[in-house]
Image (cartoon, rainbow, N blue to C red):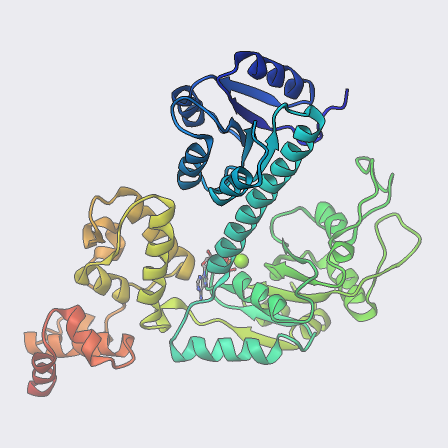
Length: 455
Ligand SMILES: Nc1ncnc2c1ncn2[C@@H]1O[C@H](COP(=O)(O)OP(=O)(O)OP(=O)(O)O)[C@@H](O)[C@H]1O
Ligand SMILES: [Mg+2]
């Protein structure tokens, strides 16, 4: 007996009970799970309840013809292969069956070995289809997750820099406040370089204690220390040919810094406890939200390593300086996440948009994403409204630090002057886009001009 290496769930439909039993026994022996139905109504029920991989159906059935049934399955489940059994092995029936979308046909009396070959092929076809579908989804998902959004002039500048330096193969130090997209940029640098087919690995230097980080980065040989039961390659070797991102590099313990410097200079790594050096061709990117130069000045970071990592510096702007990008990103996150949450939220109400624009976003893009995610989880509306956002975002001045003259104690301003300054501030955030400012402030453009002029 040969057990099939690709077992499937097969539904057999034939009004001949003896044939059903024979097929059930034979196909089960070959490793498949088999359901049988003497009537089409039963078959429909089974298809409804089970995740069947292949349908094997008789051509001549009392209720409807096998060809009609095949067409019915095709319209409901186009991915499900149907193999038709026919007593009349004529060319016309075969063609009609294939036209109706059947995957294959076999003639009666059924040759069990030939049937098995046909079913194996149908199963393989189905598994391949399934794999392609999964891969397509993954690629689509990855593309939309990895896409770097931003139209503001400061962010356009970042994108241009990425294009210019992606293929230079030098170290890049990516800095910027927390959540500004440093890891996303590192991935973009990798993806746009000739190394894109090789691994991209990111390690957070702040997440591991010194000894673990050392063996994680440089590897170890068996027995190098008490817990080293297996030899471990280390990330430098694993990333060979590709890119390694040292995230939170300012946290790299001083003791490991000379070792890292040596790898960067010589492109060779010596695992802990090892006697041989291993070649590694890795592009190293580093990132931190801390001021690395200040860490050097404070004696926490070696200056030679700083210069080696900081060949090119890429500084990411904080979200509050990216004007309209806030809304662009908000809309993208709403689109992505409402799909994931199965909600039909389509956008933002105007006052809610104004809130987002006015807030100072200390946690940058990550914070915006989290705020949108939370709002989507709780909202009952088709558009997110101000009340869907947490208190600190809804505050009238949205956490913006108002001009000193506005907050200076005892400095009472006429209402119109206050209004004028507020309009100016909104315009600054929107890169002077007056149409959008008018929309967000709930006035028409003429009124906006007048209010600016009047004062
Ligand atoms: N320009 C952008 N377009 C789309 N999504 C972005 C953009 N920038 C950042 N993100 C998203 O924001 C989140 C934070 O980005 P990322 O992890 O790259 O930030 P980071 O600067 O490395 O943060 P941290 O300093 O906390 O490590 C991620 O979900 C990322 O996909
Ligand atoms: Mg990061």
